[in-house]
Structure formats: structure tokens, C-alpha cells
Length: 281
Image (cartoon, rainbow, N blue to C red; front, side):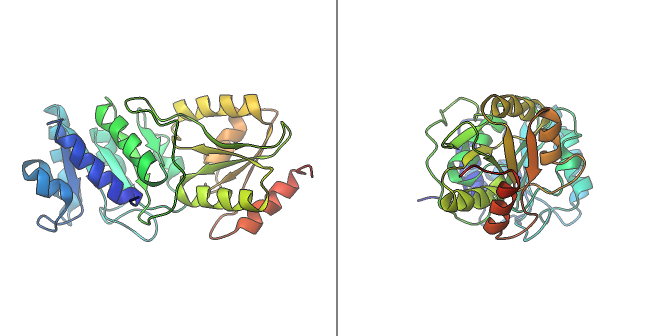
């Protein structure tokens, strides 16, 4: 049975900790609330207090001692989770922790997070991708920021996810009917849902899905995208000078890169942006 990204994260981290004593979980869930990690590894589970900033020094000490702390904010309907502000989140990352934010909405905090040196930014979709990213983060020597969804959604199986190997920088869900096809580039769960809805209405479109958005991997993804397509509509990323769409546009000179709709269930708006790029019949 498929799980939401948030539940898949909790389950996968708990399983990893059984074989890696360095993995520690700090969560907005209060101690004793039945978090699976706490039930399996109570000596390595910490509930985040309301004054969560006090835990930054704890995280820093854990990293210095050789542990790999994962800090998870509570599920949120909008923006960051209950562990606090973007400023607090960046302090955890700068201390060396991997931070997990349960929220599937558009990436309003991306321009700030991408400025952090040495942090991998990941926005997996669904159960399998989330598990693969968590495994990679647990084995990495750098912090990750992982944004996960809280709703169970149907996702296609990922045959390109190989145990022990990094998640591909570009997952091609469809290559389109010809080289001139407009390519949808989806980011995050909401963006992927919009892109799949648009392809359902216009199956000739190409669709490339991105999981990692830090500068190093986004540059690699842009190289692959540019070798295969010339016109792109990005779904799931907010507009802004340092946003995903604008960054891809800078990395793809000579290509057309435009943003999809800003919010909500707007498959028709995605198709309208495709028409702006004059998709051939």
C-alpha cells in the first residue's frame, strides 16, 4: 500500500536507523505521541519543544559527535511546518542537520534555501521517491532539505530508482511525440499533478520530472533537458528572480522557458501556457 511522502519518510528513517546507529530523529511530534521512530529507537528520538530554537545547539552537538540528525517539522497546510520560521529552518541546515518539511505546495522558500552552501534541495513525489531521497540523505556527508507531501496520491512506479544509487536528476515520464514538442517540467507533488493532468488532455506533450533543485543538480538537469528539448513550461514553482523557472532559463540560453500557473488546480492554465509556445498540432 502506498503512503504519503510524510509517512514514507517516517517509516523509511525508522528502518534505516535499525542498521545505522548514527541516525537520530528530532520531530515536532511530542514525545509519547506514537511516532514510529520513537517506538523503535526511543534513545535516538527527540520531540521538538515550542522553543525549538533551543534545539539548534543540540543538533550542532549531535553532528559534531558523528550523528546524522533528521529534523522534521510538523505537517502544515501552507508554508513551513510547525517547527518554526524559515530562519530557524536554515539554522538547522547550517548546523548540519537534514530538515524535512511536510508540505506539498509551491516552492515559495526556494530562493532562500538555494543560497545555502553545501545543502541538497529535494522535492520527491510519493512513497518510492521519498524513500530513495531519505536513503541518500542518510548516507551523505552534507545536509538535505526535503519537502514531502502529506496526502496519499497515486504515483507511477519508478523503474529508474535503483537501490543504493542516486535518484536521477531528470525522470522522463514522457518524451513527447517529436523533438519539437513542448516539455512540461514538474517540480514537487502539486507541480507533478498539474503536469500529469495537462498530459492527460494533451498526450503529445513531453514531461520531465525533477526531484533535486540545488544548483549542482539543477545545472546537470538543465544540460539533459537542453539536449532533448527547446521549449519548456515549468509547473509547481513560484515566480521570482531566483526561482526554479528563472534559474532554468539562465541555464538554458537559446531555449524558451516559461512558468506555469501560480496556484491551485489549473490544468487549463498549464495548457494555455503551452499554447503560448505554439505547440504544433
